[in-house]
Amino acid sequence: MIGFPLEKKVLYLSLPEWKKSLAAMWFAQLSGMGAITGVLAFLPLYVPELGITTVEETSLWSGILLSSASLFAALSGPHWGAYADRSGRKLMVQRAMASSGLLMILMAFAVNVYQMLALRIFQGILGGFTAAALALVTSMAPPEEIGFTMGFYQTAMIAGSTFGPFFGGLIADHFGYRQAFIAFGIMCLVSLVIIQLFVTEHFTPVQQAAKPSVIRQSKEVLAIPGLRSMLFIQFLIQFAIQAIAPILPLFVKSLSPDTTYIASTCGTIIAAAGLTSAMASASMGPITHRYSHKSILSAAGGFAALSFGAQALATSVYTLGITRGISGFFMGAMLPSVNSIIFLLIPPEKRGVAFGVSSSAALMGNVVGPMAGGIIAVYFGTPSVFWLTAALFVLVSTWAALYVHVPDSPRKD
Image (cartoon, rainbow, N blue to C red; front, side, top):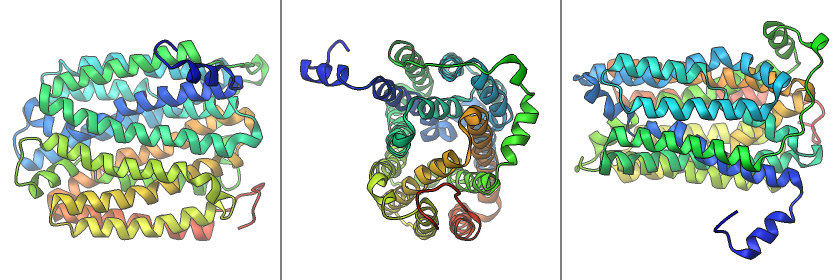
């Protein structure tokens, strides 16, 4: 707390222990998520420096590099989630941050796409940050404060996704791509320190006799009524969002008359969506008292589809930035509702493995999305990727309206 004004220190010290830990996790999430997502602003622009020269190969390799970490994180997610239920959620968050920080720094020294691919794969295998972090913050909060906790914590996830690409673009343009990786690695290690010093977890491990295999636990989680529909929605949302990732910097470059600060421009456009998304998430608390999570999810999905269709028609960087900002608002409305519904569906003793499974579903969207976006852009052109995204959000809206049911919700849909 060194460097904070006295009145803010007093306010912090007067908070309940769970709120102190939540505040620390908010800052750690902001820094950690910023580092993990920050490469989106410049990785497709960095690929040519790794020996890939043609536009087609750049789009394809951008998709491969962006999706590889997510693929292996999805495969390892249930394992780390189950391990968190046995050994502690805080420990899993620390492990993920430490490995990501060190691997980010190593990425600064990659000399070809194959080395970068190997490092991205290891980053995915040793990941599991989001699932463990969600399990940790929900286990710390009192049951009656879960709505507030999820909305508040979601703003850190989104704000980190906003700050990271913007910061990464600035570093890449002014100091170089490799220096940006080093900066992100340091950010992960800063998150690790914050968690160690300021997050308190009162963890009771599962007894040895009650430790089934990860596969069995995952099957038990998948058998929870209503959860599979939510996993499908998570997959669709991340598929739609990440399909844009490998082509957005290239699309911005095609719209911009000046390519001097293209990484910064792309980071700013990504930040615009993240900023409006964070604003929407922060305002969801009062709205969820009037409307159900299911209704919010369905309506926001429909409006998101319209906003991505508008992006396909953008003819300038400014138009693209405005429409990205609009789409970010509706995505920010969807994500807290998705996590809240999942929380309502799962029993407390299975939160680690359940959030691991749900994180894997989202990460599979991160895998398929960039690959599909890169391939579709090569064969059908960049605007077609935005139309695909719009169609996916139409499916999200329809699926939520027809198939999502939330037992034990305070409101009936």
